[in-house]
Amino acid sequence: MSDKPKTSSCPMCKKPAERAGNPSFPFCSSRCRHLDLSKWLDEDYRVTTNITDRSLPSEEEDE
Image (cartoon, rainbow, N blue to C red; front, side, top):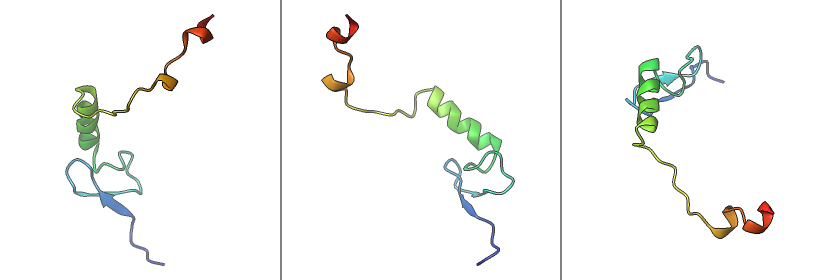
């Protein structure tokens, strides 16, 4: 096996982000982690899903 540290690309800046000893992983730094959080809070990112009748509570269940 190789002793090479496991890295991946930071989702924000694409710089290498090491897993070991990095509390901000998968980001390379706390700055990139906070930039990503800011995008979620500003609603630049969204999780979309179709709402179906099955996902809504029925009126019969409320009684």
